[in-house]
Length: 393
Image (tube, rainbow, N blue to C red):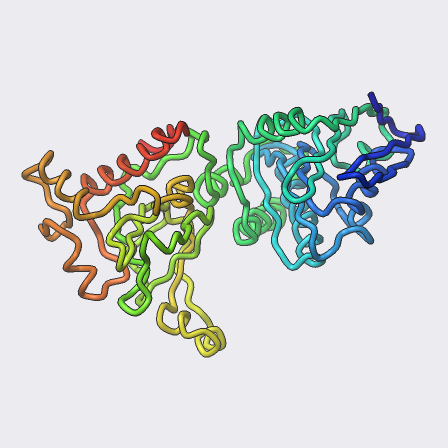
């Protein structure tokens, strides 16, 4: 067993497909930097973070690095004032060097400290330790950790870290909302960092961030309206055989006209032109944005669909594999009307959606009864794959 402590020298070797890689150092900080030089993929799990990741990342992060983070973001007390800035340092430092915004996940009850490094997507080596991802934790505190090389154990550690996520894939837009909330409260209300009063981060997380499969605290608002979001068009249809995935956790859904009636918390059921089936469903998580004139000139799609809003994907697993067992809207509507003969599909009394789609609408409203029926059908897809989905009532 290889034990890592701060201020004690260590050295060991890794057999990587017959190539011996030598690692040496004298604390957690030097260990992680050494491993980042050897491995371009990593998962960091830690409730506390550096204020500034520059010292950890400088000189070791390259274009091909991908580092995923699991951490907390407490909506109360000291952490709510510091954590958004720590997350911003982590993400912007990586984006500056790799060109990509990293994956950031939130587990509000996290206490574990785990660091796993991969090659080609397979875990190779990991560290289970008492050391948080902070300057004190990696350099100065009396911390102890052990090196793990067993691939099966590493996979189990990774899975255990993902089992209790609350929010996934925090986007640059979402983090920007958190930073703005902290800045506004500090400026307007003169909060001290130690104040144990909420400043609004819980509302931002609940209303703007994508919940994990197991997060049962997030619900659509009581008066949520339901809409069909039409994707694709006659010249660019979407068919199951194309196997295009619709699993973006925080999608920017586009529209030909400003969707003025859609509000934050409403539900959008995405359907495919061509495939005539459902692709995924979302909760609206922002206001309406319009592409700039430069964006419209440089991208024909932006000119055709200039308006967009951010929406949280509440059916990621279905959107990942919808093409394997498509839910065709003809058959779903027929089943809905058979079970509810007096119900309508749209508020105007229509019994189908094909007319509105053929008319060229990029979105239109459906009844709450039909919307909930479709959601339940999509959610059953999770159950059929053994994925618990207790989200939304």
